[in-house]
Image 1 (spheres, rainbow, N blue to C red):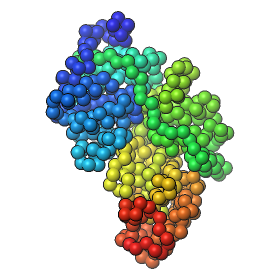
Image 2: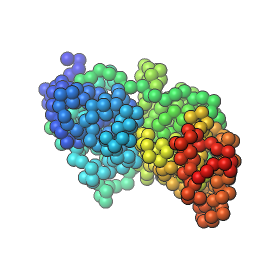
Image 3: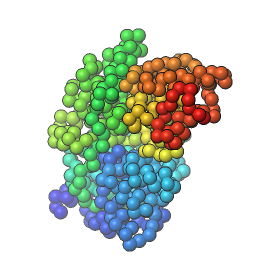
Image 4: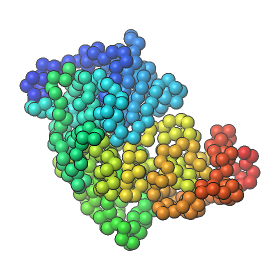
Length: 505
């Protein structure tokens, strides 16, 4: 215990150590909890499971707010225990997804930069307990986060009480990485003084009133590994197409060989596409993203990255062991911020980011669906993709052209759910090629998308739809009674494919 207490450097807090089970008894039916954690990193681990254990003998529900998805199968266990009334702003667990789609749990799908503003304005809340993972508590009462910041700082500021989980498995070398900045109230705040991706503008930990800390719990558990899969031949092709596009931007003078700060969204495809830059000629790169995945550390290892700013570090098991086993190699390049800063629209616009995010599907006009399978079934959530797409210098969306063995085309006549309108999408990329949509009218986009991005199996089918749509006229021609027929055919026949001219609508 003496070694553990060294992590509590504030002299008046050493007597607040409790067990997770005791801390869990403080939480009552109907309360709202703000949990640390962003994409399986830096999540509170002990108190949530003690709360789940309580559900074996008690009936209650709580609202769960986080930064993004949680690790350690916490969301799965929450869903199975049936104790979540409302969840926001993002999740990525299949069991929880099923409960949401069955209507057994409410889910608020938010842009990740918006949650803090809603809490600050009192639109959602109040937060009864903030439960935050930390490396330590400093002498002056700063909570030092672990591998994510997410929404932890705004939770701590606005919660009635705080429970700190000090994770002994997380290295104390994390202290000093964080840059915690609070924007202040809307209408009263000053400009955010962040001029370069590697600027530091805040404090090394989360400032709180120590009196708000009701209890401190000790844990000893690393983050859950990322679930991303390795790059494959198709993602390699996508990366090559993206590099071809970037080189064309350099040739015409819209970019330099230093490119611009890079952002890559969570997920295997975006990670794999960014990984494709490892063997490129580009060096001295800045990363300004919400999540740092394996690909960013591959780029660091290749000597390509000057600095990397994020709100979360989410790694596969092998990469986690390598990075944290040799952390001094990476430490000086890393900065971790609250997600409302990593995803802040004004900063994204001012720094001029190149933003790479993943689509489930996009349509012939450039509208993107990132969240809903066949228009109704929630996958994970919009995450930060909208924060970046609307404001980036280059809003790039990537996806493989087909799924489910070719039975699904990722390019359709009309997306079944719109997360990013055609107005916010600049470039779309598949393994087939890329389409630059900037400055194109709707009718100009169609052939560029079909010819460059659609799988050859589906091109004739898309052209058939568009030819009929043209007979109806309009700025954005559609055959409304057939616009979702591909999704209907998928549901009825297990495929979007049909013989041209043979599908009955």
